[in-house]
Amino acid sequence: MSSRTGLTLMTPGRANRRPSIMRSKPTILIAEDSADAREMMEVLLRSKGYRVVSAENGVRALELAIRRLPDAVLLDLQLPKLDGLSVTRNLRLHPSMKKVPIIILSGHDPHRYRQQAIDAGSDEYLLKPLDFEYLQAVLDRMVPLARGPVRSALPAGR
Image (tube, rainbow, N blue to C red; front, side):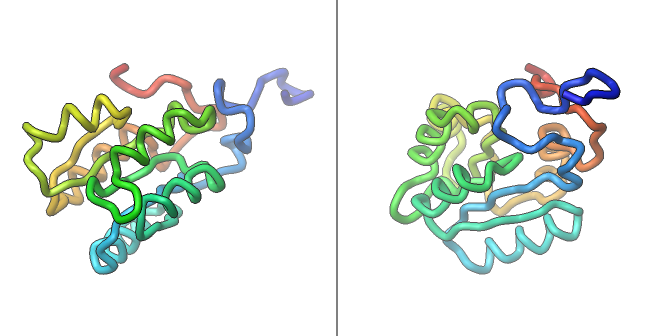
Protein backbone atom coordinates (compact mmCIF):
# COMPACT_ATOMS: atom_id res chain seq x y z
CA MET A 1 0.00 0.00 0.00
CA SER A 2 1.33 3.41 -0.89
CA SER A 3 1.42 5.78 2.05
CA ARG A 4 0.75 8.81 -0.17
CA THR A 5 -2.17 7.50 -2.21
CA GLY A 6 -3.58 4.68 -0.09
CA LEU A 7 -3.69 2.50 -3.24
CA THR A 8 -2.56 -1.08 -3.22
CA LEU A 9 -0.12 -1.65 -6.06
CA MET A 10 -0.28 -5.43 -5.99
CA THR A 11 -2.62 -7.22 -8.35
CA PRO A 12 -5.30 -9.13 -6.39
CA GLY A 13 -4.46 -12.82 -6.20
CA ARG A 14 -0.77 -12.25 -6.90
CA ALA A 15 0.48 -10.89 -3.61
CA ASN A 16 3.87 -12.56 -4.04
CA ARG A 17 4.57 -10.69 -7.28
CA ARG A 18 6.29 -7.35 -7.54
CA PRO A 19 4.04 -4.30 -7.99
CA SER A 20 3.05 -3.78 -11.62
CA ILE A 21 4.49 -0.28 -11.55
CA MET A 22 7.92 -1.89 -11.16
CA ARG A 23 7.47 -4.23 -14.15
CA SER A 24 7.96 -2.14 -17.25
CA LYS A 25 7.76 -5.07 -19.67
CA PRO A 26 5.65 -8.22 -19.38
CA THR A 27 7.60 -11.48 -19.25
CA ILE A 28 6.61 -14.30 -21.58
CA LEU A 29 7.74 -17.88 -20.96
CA ILE A 30 8.17 -19.88 -24.17
CA ALA A 31 8.31 -23.68 -23.91
CA GLU A 32 9.24 -25.15 -27.28
CA ASP A 33 11.45 -28.15 -28.05
CA SER A 34 12.44 -26.94 -31.52
CA ALA A 35 15.43 -24.65 -31.04
CA ASP A 36 14.70 -22.80 -34.30
CA ALA A 37 11.04 -22.18 -33.47
CA ARG A 38 11.94 -21.15 -29.90
CA GLU A 39 14.59 -18.72 -31.12
CA MET A 40 12.25 -17.22 -33.72
CA MET A 41 9.55 -16.60 -31.10
CA GLU A 42 12.13 -15.14 -28.70
CA VAL A 43 13.41 -12.70 -31.33
CA LEU A 44 9.92 -11.67 -32.44
CA LEU A 45 8.61 -11.17 -28.90
CA ARG A 46 11.70 -9.25 -27.78
CA SER A 47 11.42 -7.02 -30.84
CA LYS A 48 7.88 -6.15 -29.72
CA GLY A 49 9.12 -5.22 -26.24
CA TYR A 50 8.46 -8.32 -24.14
CA ARG A 51 10.96 -9.92 -21.79
CA VAL A 52 11.38 -13.58 -22.74
CA VAL A 53 12.49 -16.69 -20.88
CA SER A 54 12.50 -20.05 -22.60
CA ALA A 55 12.54 -23.75 -21.93
CA GLU A 56 13.24 -26.71 -24.18
CA ASN A 57 11.08 -29.24 -22.30
CA GLY A 58 8.06 -29.41 -20.01
CA VAL A 59 9.95 -30.02 -16.77
CA ARG A 60 12.13 -26.96 -17.34
CA ALA A 61 9.06 -24.90 -18.30
CA LEU A 62 7.36 -25.83 -15.04
CA GLU A 63 10.47 -24.95 -13.02
CA LEU A 64 10.93 -21.60 -14.78
CA ALA A 65 7.26 -20.67 -14.50
CA ILE A 66 7.19 -21.24 -10.75
CA ARG A 67 10.49 -19.45 -10.20
CA ARG A 68 10.07 -16.52 -12.62
CA LEU A 69 6.26 -16.00 -12.46
CA PRO A 70 5.82 -14.88 -16.08
CA ASP A 71 2.92 -12.73 -17.23
CA ALA A 72 1.99 -15.33 -19.88
CA VAL A 73 3.12 -18.80 -20.94
CA LEU A 74 3.38 -20.15 -24.49
CA LEU A 75 3.52 -23.96 -24.40
CA ASP A 76 4.10 -26.39 -27.22
CA LEU A 77 1.57 -29.23 -26.92
CA GLN A 78 4.21 -31.91 -27.52
CA LEU A 79 7.15 -31.17 -25.22
CA PRO A 80 9.73 -33.72 -24.10
CA LYS A 81 9.73 -34.91 -20.46
CA LEU A 82 6.29 -33.39 -19.70
CA ASP A 83 3.76 -32.43 -22.40
CA GLY A 84 2.05 -29.06 -22.62
CA LEU A 85 -1.24 -30.30 -21.16
CA SER A 86 0.53 -31.76 -18.11
CA VAL A 87 2.51 -28.55 -17.63
CA THR A 88 -0.73 -26.56 -17.83
CA ARG A 89 -2.48 -28.76 -15.26
CA ASN A 90 0.51 -28.46 -12.89
CA LEU A 91 0.74 -24.69 -13.31
CA ARG A 92 -2.95 -24.27 -12.51
CA LEU A 93 -2.34 -26.02 -9.17
CA HIS A 94 0.24 -23.40 -8.16
CA PRO A 95 -1.41 -20.40 -6.42
CA SER A 96 0.74 -17.82 -8.24
CA MET A 97 -0.06 -19.30 -11.65
CA LYS A 98 -3.83 -19.75 -11.42
CA LYS A 99 -4.64 -16.61 -13.44
CA VAL A 100 -1.57 -16.35 -15.68
CA PRO A 101 -2.61 -16.73 -19.33
CA ILE A 102 -1.46 -20.02 -20.84
CA ILE A 103 -1.47 -20.43 -24.61
CA ILE A 104 -1.02 -23.90 -26.10
CA LEU A 105 0.77 -23.98 -29.46
CA SER A 106 0.29 -27.01 -31.68
CA GLY A 107 0.33 -28.32 -35.19
CA HIS A 108 -2.24 -30.94 -34.19
CA ASP A 109 -5.89 -30.91 -35.22
CA PRO A 110 -7.69 -28.31 -33.12
CA HIS A 111 -10.94 -30.30 -33.30
CA ARG A 112 -9.20 -33.08 -31.42
CA TYR A 113 -6.97 -31.13 -28.99
CA ARG A 114 -8.45 -27.66 -28.38
CA GLN A 115 -11.00 -28.86 -25.81
CA GLN A 116 -8.35 -30.94 -24.03
CA ALA A 117 -6.17 -27.83 -23.78
CA ILE A 118 -9.05 -25.75 -22.39
CA ASP A 119 -10.00 -28.53 -19.94
CA ALA A 120 -6.37 -28.64 -18.74
CA GLY A 121 -6.56 -24.92 -17.96
CA SER A 122 -5.19 -23.15 -21.01
CA ASP A 123 -6.71 -19.88 -22.16
CA GLU A 124 -6.04 -20.28 -25.87
CA TYR A 125 -5.06 -22.89 -28.46
CA LEU A 126 -3.10 -21.60 -31.45
CA LEU A 127 -2.13 -23.58 -34.53
CA LYS A 128 1.38 -23.87 -35.86
CA PRO A 129 2.87 -22.52 -37.95
CA LEU A 130 2.09 -19.47 -35.87
CA ASP A 131 0.52 -16.40 -37.36
CA PHE A 132 2.64 -13.97 -35.36
CA GLU A 133 0.24 -11.06 -35.93
CA TYR A 134 -2.57 -13.12 -34.42
CA LEU A 135 -0.35 -14.19 -31.52
CA GLN A 136 0.48 -10.52 -30.95
CA ALA A 137 -3.24 -9.67 -30.88
CA VAL A 138 -3.86 -12.43 -28.33
CA LEU A 139 -0.96 -11.23 -26.16
CA ASP A 140 -2.13 -7.61 -26.48
CA ARG A 141 -5.46 -8.70 -25.04
CA MET A 142 -4.00 -10.89 -22.29
CA VAL A 143 -0.80 -9.04 -21.30
CA PRO A 144 -0.65 -5.64 -22.95
CA LEU A 145 2.73 -3.97 -23.27
CA ALA A 146 1.39 -0.57 -22.23
CA ARG A 147 -0.04 -0.73 -18.73
CA GLY A 148 -0.89 1.68 -16.02
CA PRO A 149 0.35 1.29 -12.46
CA VAL A 150 -2.38 -1.18 -11.42
CA ARG A 151 -3.54 -4.08 -13.60
CA SER A 152 -7.03 -5.44 -13.51
CA ALA A 153 -7.38 -8.89 -11.97
CA LEU A 154 -9.90 -9.91 -14.64
CA PRO A 155 -8.76 -10.75 -18.17
CA ALA A 156 -10.72 -9.18 -21.02
CA GLY A 157 -13.74 -11.13 -22.15
CA ARG A 158 -14.11 -13.17 -18.95
